[in-house]
Image (cartoon, rainbow, N blue to C red):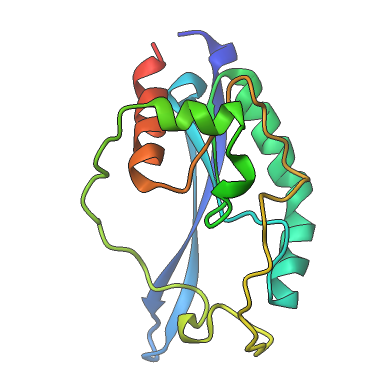
Length: 173
């Protein structure tokens, strides 16, 4: 297999466990995995240009440069890049990347496999600064993460995203 088409990922997952004293604690689990880029899709979900919560904006601004580097590296090795900034598809009506995603035959997503509890309090909409104004103030994806109109896809529709990621998996060798 072509090593140029592969990369090694350092994967980190947070798992909620009960410690010996009976408290729920988040534990970090690290592992390394080699993946074939052409059989990989990077999904950027809700990386918006704005957010009603100050803390979310601050966290995003801190991580966008690393996300941008990851996207460029993965794209350069042949991974599919799927931009999914929900509630913003009107901003991408004429985008070739949006049109490309819409042109794929829709695929039903796999059944829900369940998930760990969220690492934030969902009932307060994810605000860790106790802000309560949830006015939608985003219009598109964050400008710090480029969209390559020649090869990326844009969708916030689960069947289109599933089709896009399925296309990535089946296009690899």
